Image (cartoon, rainbow, N blue to C red; front, side, top):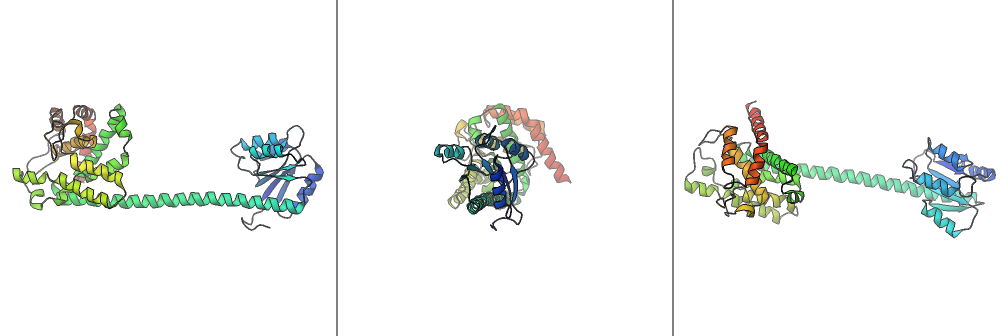
Length: 367
């Protein structure tokens, strides 16, 4: 017989109220399958509570509970609905066949049945069921392979991203850890926005995972800034500061070149916004474009707070780190000038979380 499955014999439940049919059917099948005979639908349902066959041969015309009633119960139970059911019938009734097929039967076999034909029909349907299971397993395995490959690609992407971000910090070593800290601060602000429902429609359109990943590239333009300016151990001159401000333009240009070479646009769209707008100010006195108010994308307005807070509480060659409370006061005092008022109010509610992040990074660096 069929060699499409394992060497384990398949199990068939043969249900018929006629003893002759049960005997003939079992005789025809017993050489190839494990056959259990049952003379009523009630006994079948009882048997199914503890045993699940590979296929059921089910008579339609039975007293008390006919085949249609039985299959309805079988197909409505999670444990049994997958079992293939073939109806046995002595009737030549098209409407009856259509009803049975609509209830979930896979075939009809007319009684009295030919043993050879019965065997062939059962073999065919078991092969189909085997192939269906194999296809499901294949699809599941394929999905796992895709997920594994996707995870691998994302890990590679994140590794490259982290390397680029670390390269920026390596060149601008006075702000070591800045990228990781500002990303953490940004995450706190976005979470807080979601809690209070501010800008909920806009945030709902974001892929938050990509947003936070792309934020790491907000200072990527510093790669193009001259070392003597980027690493100057002191306050910049006006001319030098004008050059430093170009890192926002350089960052936008770098990311635009990336966008030309990849179909992954969402991640880079976010990154471009961060790079180009995190130094814009609410009152229009920022750079590089002097955007004002909500002309500045929300991502840029959020990063402005995270970026400035980190600069305030970090040591620089031209200043010592401000205490957290003083940094909070400075940002609060810039409400409506440097920063959007609503976002400053939000920052004040979560400033303790900013402080905790800053402290945790300092503790790590002191280890």
